[in-house]
Structures are given as structure tokens and as C-alpha cells.
Image 1 (cartoon, rainbow over the protein chains, first blue to last red):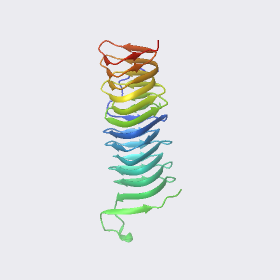
Image 2: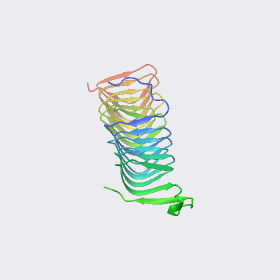
Image 3: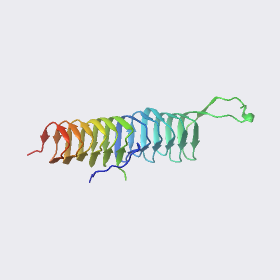
Image 4: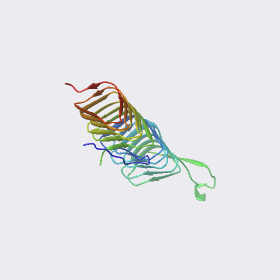
Length: 136
Length: 104
């Protein structure tokens, strides 16, 4: 039963668990993916990939990104990237900061800016690239 | 609440298929199909062929529509395309250009 709704002002968007999108998604607002997305995603807002959801795209850009589902592709975040314990990620992850919970599975490249502590030969500012071998 | 919502600031170019309801307040280009209801809200822009159970249009829709149940064009709607459904209502103030097929 569909009825008239005038809700969701402010650019909120959700791809429900029964939904599949094949194509390009762009937007200013936040996006929650509970279903399946195949294609590039470019958001000014935050991206949430819920548990059970899949996102496959060559380019995924958003502000902060939290992942509990499956992501395949190159992710660029201007904010925080958070991989929860159920997350499975394959590809390159670039973010201002990246948090990974115990149990998250990640295979690919992790690029984020941080300072190494001095005992690890740190003191050199700038981009440090860590290569994470994936546990599968 | 497993329905899909395309918010006002969001543009999707491609194909959307859903087993549940879909509400479009943003922009969709391509193809849109849902097993349940589809609502195209006022201000939304859809340039797509739409297939659904029932369809409510308050925004702008360019494309052919097939609904297994019904299609309601609300006041303020602007629809260009052919509509195929068992029941169709066009409210006063809705703009519509195209054919209606009610399978009589």
C-alpha cells in the first residue's frame, strides 16, 4: 500500500534490503545501503553500508563511510572510514582516518595520513602507506 | 522498514529494481521497477520507464508506466508518456501527455 508521503526532506536516501541499483549514484545527502549497488557512488554526505548489503563500484566517494557489509572497489572518504566486525572490503581505501574492528576482513590497499611514532622511524610527516594483507 | 528512498539531493542514473516500496524525492534516470508501490514525490524528477504494483505521481515523470494495480496522478504532477494500468486517476491540476491503456 503506497500512500502519499511528504517525508525525508534534507536529502536522506536509502536503498532498501530488497532493492538493487545498477548505475551511478550521486548526491549531496547521506545514503544508507541495505540492498545491492553496482556502480559508482559519489556523495557529499555520509555513506553507510549495512550488514548484508553489497556495494560494487570502481569509484566510491563520500564524506564518512561506515561499513558492515561488502564493499568492492576504490573508496575515497574525506572523513572517517569505519569497518565494523562484519565488514568485508576489497580494494583501495583512502580516508582521513580509518578504524577497523576486530573481525573485519580487508584485502587491498590502505592509504591514510598519520604520523608514525618516533621509534618506528616516524617524525616524517605526510602520507604513509600501509599495505594490509587480507585475511580471507 | 526496508523500503527504498531516493532523497531530494540524490541522483541515480541506471536501473533500480526493488521487491519493496520505492519513494523518489530526487532524480532517477534509466529504469525503475518495484514489486510494490512507487511514489514520485512533488519536486522529484524521473526520466525512466516505470514498472510497479501501484504508482503515485506528484512530481515530474517522463517515460512509460506500467502498473499491475493502479496509477494516481496528483495535482501538480507532470507526466509525459504512456500509462498502462487497470485503474487510473488524474487529479485536477495534473498535467498529462500520452496514452492511457486500461486493458478494456
